Image (tube, rainbow, N blue to C red; front, side):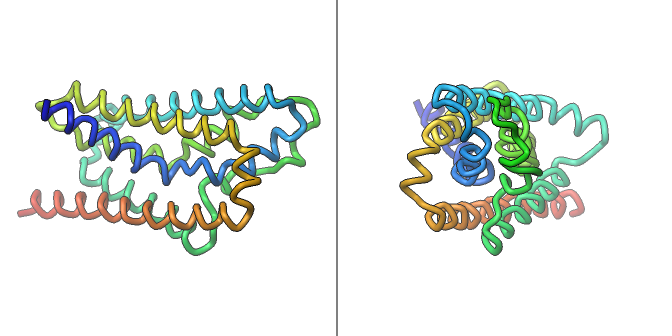
Length: 218
């Protein structure tokens, strides 16, 4: 029973770690702009495909993370510190300039023809939802899975990735209502709050990596 409770808590931690980075709320205006010429059915379909693509990208990087570490001889502490620094930069951008990861996407609605163009993989899923910050986080979580609970650890992180993707799908599917409800200033406020949470997570990653380096040197 205690193991189940711990697993549920860990899944929640994975979701809370990924959600501020993925920040689907900040993706809503871009998603609306790129799909404004399409029907409501088209927008719902694009939202579903975007979430599925984002989940697939994160799962792929999560499962291949250990192979990449072994191939390049990178230490786990190095992965945690590098990932923390990347996430910290994204957090500062969200806090001090109001830019989320979605704003790194090149182009805009004017670059899309009036036809119903499929924009679910690029730019919405990648680099929008599953950008470098999310990839760094899932690889960081993969490096922290205990050796005696490998199966449970992988299941926890995979569940967290799927739940985060489902939340992103819900937000994008309801982007019309969300934009009307929050308004431009509301979306900016949510972005800054998520940026603060993201900075806290990044500091935790860096501190964990530095502690491991200190232990290895000692």
